Image 1 (cartoon, rainbow, N blue to C red):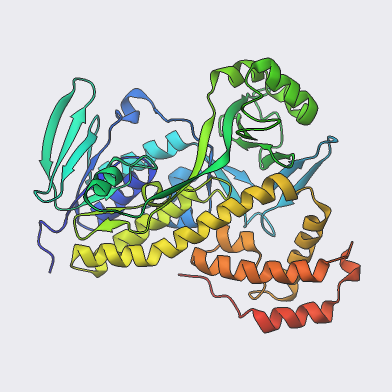
Image 2: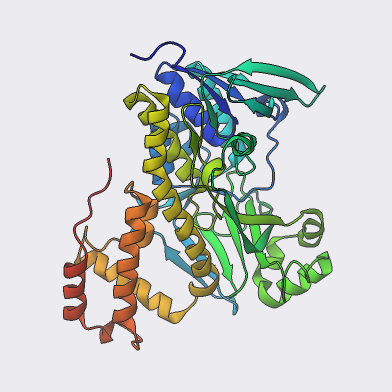
Length: 455
């Protein structure tokens, strides 16, 4: 049996993952303390940094259901059926994510979701401590020093174990690295992003189709727009850091307007404050964080972005972090020894984090380069046809990642096989009428087993 001390745990970070994990553990009888460097957003308003809208998928919803949070969260979410592609000539095309409205994703406001999860954590019995920035950790003495930045006061607190849910710039990870090499490696994308806003229409409704993720793909760069429940859209422009065009050459509002007039003309009437927002909002960096080790024996473990930050192009960062929370809570129940629990958690989740990090990078190339490419569109047609011809065996990549709970590593391995089938079958073809169906069917049956979703 675990002692009462071993059932005590201290979380660093009261963001999305920290608040969800606090709820899951408190409901299992753990004594949970959560320390957050910012103030309580329920009192002073949400102090989010620059962030790309969150896309909630089945993995995230499954975790929210386990915390009895899904129903409340979904009242604030906006359904997105697919990608609404805006071509350079002004045409639009909806590319569905799934077969019907049972296979969609949801746009959710980070601040609203965070507040909802904080309420649930507190109701479950977790103790929330705001204005508590982790300054340092003495892992031998098992004490952590927290600073209140309002008055620079310091507080030294003992702990049984620390969990870092404090994001890509994790203070706990930095403290762990001072004790032991975690094999940290960060790869920055050669692109950055800048956020703009599409306000509501004059009648108070949405200006453009609300139930879609809008995308303006232009090869090496693109814009996307995600709906918010207040009838706005958050627009994110992704440009290279260098070259033409890039954030090195498009700095002023006038330069941004010229770029949009050339490449995103149909978006200009939608963004009245384009020039002002371009100059006011600084570019945000995009990077992938890799760690070889996520924990130090029984004393500390990392999850979510603190362990495996990724670029946002598959919309899975939050969903992956929520899966981490569910997995860690389960491992803590299965193992009486914290070191064993942390090791088992890392062994299960690290391969899956690596898989979705790779798929997120690949999806960026697809979004900006391929969604308006005829070869890609034909492969998508064939993908849907094979899904109908071989249900449960040929499962589209996006379906496996977004609408199922199978491990990300399994989705990656099967996607590689399926991509090979699609490319080979469509090579030199311009329509499905030219497909050798007997050969394709035989290839599918030979290379793909029936896929069973995770519980």
